Length: 469
Image (cartoon, rainbow, N blue to C red; front, side):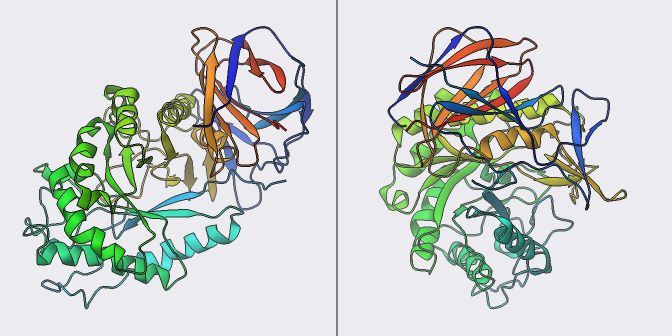
């Protein structure tokens, strides 16, 4: 965390100058708490390039439950270009199928093929995933960071002889099945590289604890921390290190943060495993019962040399809750609250599960439907950008790769959720989430530049930017 501090104090109003957006949101209400922005092949709302004003002024972006979507304003600090789009730059790629596939498949469904002679990518990779990734790479001004996660090994490699339900790899770490599974990672990276698609990282296993649940309904594979430790030390770590992909970051856990710091202690205490590991991946599904300071904060204090990264989150996954809620402000605010909490507790990145799903919350072969920031209405050839999309934009657009989190010194207890950063060029960024029904007036004080008299509307998220030099 960088060394300068900002203060936030409560106080009354301010004046601003409007800046016209490139294309406004075409709002539509589905009767819930907020609106979606409707897009089709001919029209979609866009942003002007982000141009932070000269020192002495600031730029504000605001999204509200009432209907504002990344609307921008500029104002003057009181004394004491970039690109359109919201610049997502992290993509998670399943290694073969997951529950959001239309069917179950792996890359080598030939029993006994431990040497992986029959390994090959699926049509889902060559015809869909890879072309989409390549298109995104061409469109993105910022480099994209891809990481891959496996859900299951081929059924013949597993004790259950099944891709679903309770099961682990056959044998023990260091044995032929674990060696073959480690080489499966390398082959996956090799094949994608042939299409000029390279990866920043991999996780050792998606939600490894689910592989010990007897009737778990979709693809999974079990690892406890000791098994994952030995697999990395004896098989996966050496295989990646000896391959052309030795620079790929390896993340452990990829499961609920409730398992921290225990999981990290058991894996990272082993120097043979730890030398191959770069980070710790967490999911958000049990965050309400796993305080961030006790899990993330303690893990960072114990293992500061390993980064923390949030690799999966979604709304609508609770059985007694609606799956897709078009226009739900609450779900967007829940994302922002979790992102701010994670960032304030040493997490260095945050990943949504699905960027786009259909009106049912799929496709999903096991009917494990969920909500998404973008919902596609295929029958009408439209897609709806949810409040969740814009909540994520307040982070993805302005917290650039290489930014450093800085301290915020709050003058008194407040219900505002806040986090602050310095972009690599020194631009200050302060994100303010107000998910209460009350307006809040406050001051942002930068000792080197002065004050911003700020007003946070009820049910809103704001991003303030200004140059410090």
